[in-house]
Image (cartoon, rainbow, N blue to C red):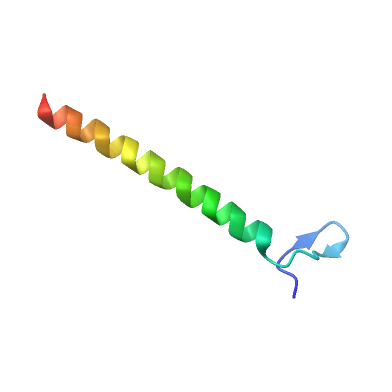
Length: 46
């Protein structure tokens, strides 16, 4: 089963790239959230 399209038609991709992309994005969002949370905690402590 293909999970996307490329210029030639259906992609032969079976999902691994999509899963890896999702996990990388999730990690980035978690790091960003943690950074923002730390900034808020520091602002409250002042």
